[in-house]
Image (cartoon, rainbow, N blue to C red):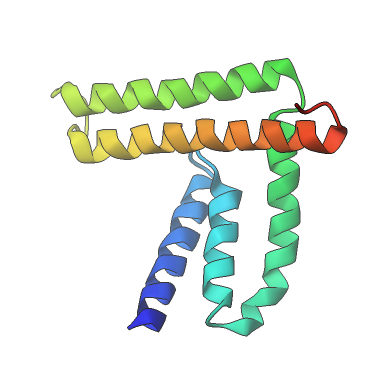
Length: 130
């Protein structure tokens, strides 16, 4: 049962991560989470974990490399949350309802959380953290 659960979770994370590579959201980090999860059951996938981890960390660092990028990332996160509220409450938008709205809100919260995590880690590595 546990193995099936791990495989399902890893596959969902991987598929959602791949979708988020072209949609707004932390695609590489979810692809990484999916690969790490699946590699616990399929050791041959381990060889893909380190290259994806390196690219995900680089993307996270790039997202907080300047105040302008941080501002745009925060605006994108807040925009996703606002869009989620609109999709949850306004009936004339396509695919309206709280299922769509909740996914947009969660995407915005994940984006803001990962932005904060990236900012803190970059500051700690550069020695400017508190």
